Image (spheres, rainbow, N blue to C red):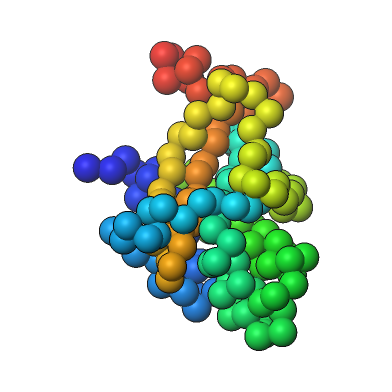
Length: 166
């Protein structure tokens, strides 16, 4: 059974794709979807009771559908608008996810979405997601991953390992 964080990430990602991009993610991937590369990624850094980032990756063949549904058919072929649309999805997913895992009273500061062509977003080899979900969308796929680096206690940051050991 998936963890509560994975379930919350899955719900936030699914709802955002359905409501904002008018696309319907599937948990079961077809062979074609599974083979589609994750060509572009965006990340949204956050700080507050938790420190970390949300990363949203997508196949290039999904990017045009996202842009067309969010910004109009003309936008579907323009790479900068595809990036903007994917960034907005990541921002909304993050904004909906954090209250679900940290509580509605928690206050977070989110950075502007940052685009990473080629799907490479990691600055440290030790980064491992706290939760991730993979979806098939049309002929491609998308992955949403949550990275939590530390929890805030007062003015002090405490690593997740130290928190779970306490």
